Amino acid sequence: MDAHDEKVICDIFSKKENSDYLASSMLTQKIFGGMFWVLFGLFAFMAARALLIARQADELFKRAALHPVLQQQLPF
Image (cartoon, rainbow, N blue to C red; front, side, top):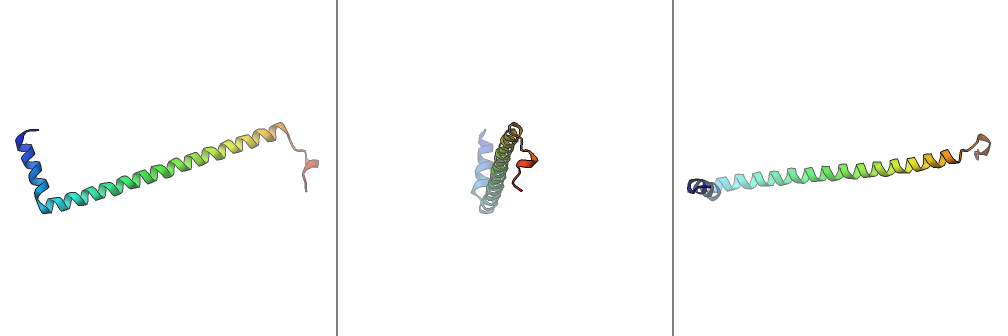
């Protein structure tokens, strides 16, 4: 980065109206970033929950396949 670029960047950051805009932009980015991580976490939680339910269903299916219940044995 040359001296002219550094001067332009310093001018942008030193002006009050620009700093307000930059602060607002950074807050917006933080909010969207937070929303992204919340949605990612929710998706990961739901995927893990679905995996646990599928494993439990598979285990129940295997148990039912090994020990079939006859109609006469049902407690109705």
